[in-house]
Image (cartoon, rainbow, N blue to C red):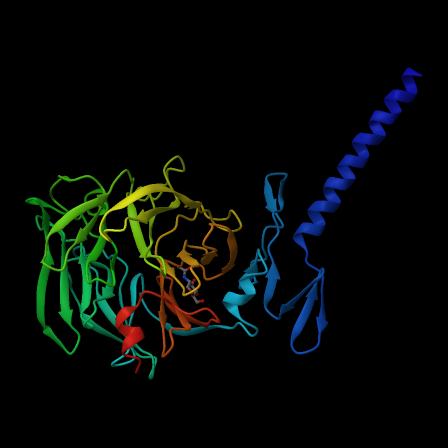
Length: 399
Ligand SMILES: *[C@@H]1O[C@H](CO)[C@@H](O)[C@H](O)[C@H]1NC(C)=O
């Protein structure tokens, strides 16, 4: 009796082990068979070629197995992802370029503006560059800048740039006339006399107000001389130049975007990227969402929209969400170093477009169906079924 029970237990354990191994193998490989019209059958789902199903996977002997395939560019986690990428998704390398932040499409010239990665030698610097979509050539607008970062077009088609400042210089928001770069003005450089930290990313609301994030990366990264005098907040600049703090409580507020209907504001927090090269996984790597009150200028009900990590657990940097954009269906896109992750309005993760090193992205082209992805060494392009939203000037001045 006793013996039999023991044998039963051993068998049960063996069975469990075999089951676990089988699951791990099944999770790490994906059996697909070719189907007509360039499609493939994966499990019971008909998928375009180049798309694969994301799997949860397990950690087996310390190795995370089955979550994703490194060679797969379009990783589907929810069938709605197909409505984002369309029937023939294809990622193209447009140009090699030192492309980090920004990603702003200017329809008048069919150009795409961005800022480079930070160089420290001989002194701290960031360049401001542009890509011509027609010739695929990259050219330099400014060899040296006050550490330019995120940017956006205002309602009149001017480029609004976050300037982090360097040395003793405070951060500021600067506006450029893209038809004559010598015509520039400072939109704001302080909040009640207190200089900004290092403005990081910026958006313009349909009422013309300018909203931006202001983390203290410049100080932490050592290119600013003075310690922060304000908290890492989000600001709103009204059309008559008044500056108000609208949200705080962040570690490193970074990308921001209004939802398609402007009833929500999304703000990413890259707190886990400390800024001195280290990673602190106890700090945020999430997207937060706020309701925009009916006055159109204040926020309430801040909460987590999605906590973000790299898709296959492979990044030491955990995969904090940096740039953020939205589409006309209310979906949210964030670049998080292993690619562009796409979320539904309710926060559900739909899938990922894998481009390693992604920092930001921007919608471009006539109807804003082209997504250009910046990954620090290159610009990739993907034509989406989804279309970019809240790009007032580009929407009303299609080339
Ligand atoms: C960016 O993409 C290019 C081309 O696909 C790749 O060679 C490069 O390693 C990527 N950059 C980073 C930082 O991962």
